[in-house]
Structure formats: structure tokens, C-alpha cells
Image (cartoon, rainbow, N blue to C red):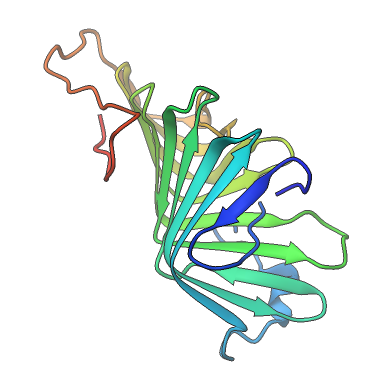
Length: 210
């Protein structure tokens, strides 16, 4: 996160978080130099952190375990028990939730490239306000451009229908998702009047697909 703009409050311990990303089959880059068989330099359990801007909560991060590995050129945070990310609107409403089985955060200490975040393994993205959901294997977060994207197979559910395809790009709140190579999709002509609307202010827990 950019110093001077974002303030990260770590409630379970002290750690630094920055930007998400790993490809459907991409390499590890500088992180290859780390021996992950060694004991991590830091392990946090039941991590809970809040990112704020101008005194307002922008994001919330939760993970059962965070392991940090470090050398002279790269720092790597791993979330082997999964990661949950909650994003809020400027008015403080819960807008987007991301769940994944695993996640990683790579920081290049040389300054030659940007920090990299990735979430992978049964990635579920819910826009609570628009009642839309996405499923994929891997998602990337470009913090500078405020985008999330993937080249993997994606399933998208919304009140208007179902879409599937390969490759997706969206703003980081999943408000305007674009599927690059869609196929075998369908639209819903009538809305279900019995559909339950989730209270995005007070709801805590897993979100169902529409």
C-alpha cells in the first residue's frame, strides 16, 4: 500500500501488505530464490487487518495463517490457509468480497518491479451490492491501475443471467467486469421475485451464488 495515502492497521500482529497476483501457470520470478522449505521469518495466525483512507475503512483482510519469507531481493507473504478480502464503498457499505484457498504477496526489494498479489484456488468474487458473483482459479490485482484480472476460465453469475469464458478484467471492486472470450452463456428474461437481498452493511459470512 502506498505510504502517505493508506494506513494499514494490523490487529493480529505487525505485518506489511501491498498488491495481489500468480498466473494460471506462471513462474515465480524473484521468489524462486526463496527456499520455502525453511522456517518462515514470521508466522501470524488469525490475521485480521484493516486498510483505511481518510479515516474510512476501504478494505479488510482476514486469513487463518500468514507466513513471511525473506531474503536480500524479495519478501514473500504466503496465505496457505486461504485469504478473505472485503472492500467497502466510500459510504462504508460492504461492496465486494473475495475468497480463495491460497494467496501470495511478493515484494521486490530492488525496486525493479511493482509488488504482486495473487489469489488462487477456488477463487470466489462477490459484488454484494450488484448481486453478482464470479468463480475462477486465479485472480490478479494491479493496485496501481486498481484492476483485477485473470486469463483463466471464469464463470459469472448475475440477476441478468450466466456467462462463462476465458480471461476477465474489472475494476478492483468488481463493478464493471468484462469477459474477453465468452461462450455458451444465457440471459434471464424474468427476475425471481423470491430472491433474498443481502444486507451489505450487517452481513457476515459466506455469500451464495445468484
